[in-house]
Length: 251
Ligand code: UDP
Image (cartoon, rainbow, N blue to C red; front, side, top):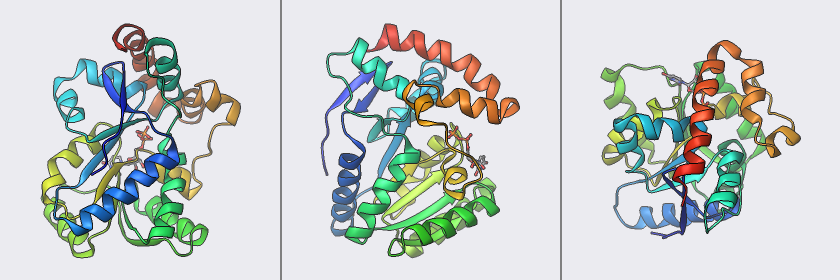
């Protein structure tokens, strides 16, 4: 398995990689995992909400500490690494962008994807669109993210029957992180990657913030403007706290 350098931003060890480098690690790990029966690697991401939760919720912090890798989903995490650590991160790895680096590398190397999460319509549309965009990408299965605990075993069986290399999990933070750690030892996959609101972007039901907002670390503001009821409180409470943690807890 590949070992990668990390830098600590606001309490989370965050990988010092670019998007393409992380996609290369994904390919190496998955090919290694196919040849050697080992537990899947769990890959999470770090943003303001996650940083804040990690400091306030012990059970979430415990789950985050069990990830094999955490990457910088938010631009602010990269800014903080430049200002407050000795080892700045080389790149922002927004999951929404990373999916495409991963898809291209998966096409080249023959890795397979299973897409779990989001509503039935969004899941279906996201997969349809990605099958058109990446004609030789093997999306071998998908399932919506609305299920009960009693259905977990059925979902595990469905995934294990297909043995995908990468399982993408979009159940929203923190539910998806808890689910991934609880299920990792039961899953016959190479990588488990959380992906939050990714499918809405892939399906085209949610527009992406303009590049200037992404570069200024304001993508969250664009998302709040689009869905103030759902996201307003989340970001208004977690962003100032995350900023404080970036200043005081990065090293
Ligand atoms: N979701 C799901 N099952 C649930 C709760 C949420 O599949 O029980 C999906 C939801 O439909 C959405 C994603 O999880 O597609 C979470 O999106 P959100 O924008 O909250 O994620 P973020 O990227 O902000 O973490």
